[in-house]
Image (tube, rainbow, N blue to C red):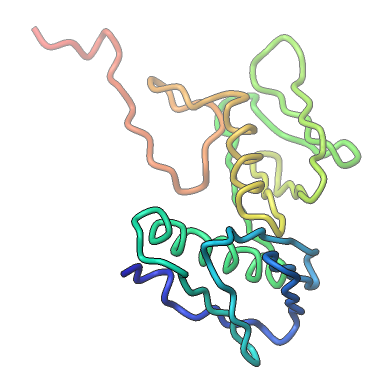
Length: 180
């Protein structure tokens, strides 16, 4: 039995949830999202709750149960309070600026790197080395944050590059650290 799938999803008071056929639509102050649920699952809506139930007990349906419960929970939570990922730009001369709605990075290349705005995502720059990626769709926020990180992955010898806030890096010793 899926323990995650059995949990009830609480709907915040500011969020309006509508079930149309096999689709759950959530609208809130941060935007609107919809999740299409497979036909093997049944959606039950209470006063301020949503619960998913399975039609059968086979392995595939059990695995989908917990997955879609969390996808609906992430959509309902995201339209109420946007999901956020924070990135740090580390390194001498490395920085980030907002240019309109786009991000402009200086990452040690011969040219500045521009990251265009993605629909449904907002960027916020704190200082000149921190970026906050926010949006209602948790998957899209994570994907955009990772795409930004890949612009300059952290160097394993000096730690220069873009990393998630709080991410621990294992710094390798250089050639001079070799023991005799």
